[in-house]
Length: 541
Figure 1 (cartoon, rainbow, N blue to C red):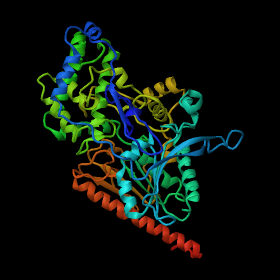
Figure 2 (figure 1 turned 135 degrees about the vertical axis):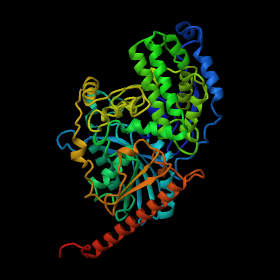
Figure 3 (figure 1 turned 90 degrees about the vertical axis):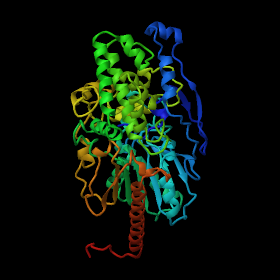
Figure 4 (figure 1 turned 180 degrees about the horizontal axis):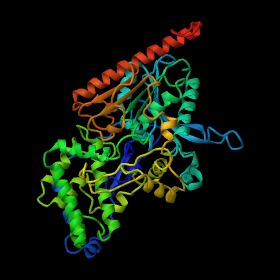
């Protein structure tokens, strides 16, 4: 999956290095300058007389001017705290009580103590601050409904490391499972309710992408703890191995096709010309036009270049918001349209492709060249894992429980043929992690597509989001509601109000707020009946 991950965790964003400086409260980001791998002379000597640095400089002039968005607080009153979390919830013998510090963020700014609901974000595969910074709808709703807000970090990500810096070593990865993460959240909610005198307060889970899956799973696995869930852009069918493996890149292609006529054919011509040049041995020309730091001179290099480029399309399609964002990279408003404009502005398709991928990889315009091996690393998730420790953890997860065997075929999509079969996945995962994927496990453990017996879950999807095709897009019952957001990208509804929001997301948020309010009221009434000793409606007497 290429779910919501911070630029720090994903790594494959630009040639600029960044760091977070965090205290108990949110603090602004600091940026460093561009990373330089080689001197210009060294690179020119390796690639010939045509300088990729010069090409990227020219491309940067053609990109629209877009300054970095102003830093925004992650949410009113959020404070960072640590909780001594059980390392292994399902082990009772010696060592079963060992703990690790799980990070969570909490805001009681709007909370009506002891009465207001608890809004609990089920953290994804990354730094929890990143999700708090991009989920302002939760705070807007908290203000309306007087809620306590909690963002919990997923084990093995960010600072919540069960084995410290050695957490992703082979000997320590066995506790990185969906089941353990859900148990973390259930324990944390229970303990914090006790600590804050909130035992009778209803709990609503929120999450986007993988976090959206987890919010739905929380309601399914722990309905005694969570009273309802908003699962935004949650591909619960795809990850269970259900659906068409060509769906994802077909839908990425459709986003670009709908944006500007002629965009997709231009992309196809660029990839075909790169392949033709490679077969003719024109390695320098490919490297120069694509502005790569190293010469593309082998089949491995060519495949890496294709993966690098395809990843940019994936991220741009996911983040196709109607305003500029700094979520998974500095992206302009409507980045799909901007990318199409870039490739169509060039008479040379390959140089146009370099400009298009630069919308994602070179948003600052300061990158001297593309280090395709550093910016993109193949893994068990064809939509991209990123780089760094969080990417390692996600790679392990998609080698065990989470199934993502998408492929591109150059027939139903615009990308080079890049197969990724179950056999290829199994071979990779055994070689990398010494594990064999369990392709059927999520269907058994989390019900696959047979969710009718669940309740109180909203499944929201935007029609621009390539993950939508792997989610729930039709309501399954009166309490399992599907919400489609026309003109919406990846979990747009979780983002805060913006003047550029399409009407559909405004209406979606109103509907979600109404449903959640009703869940909270129903939960309060149920608890009141229980306290009076009155049997719930429909119960046996």
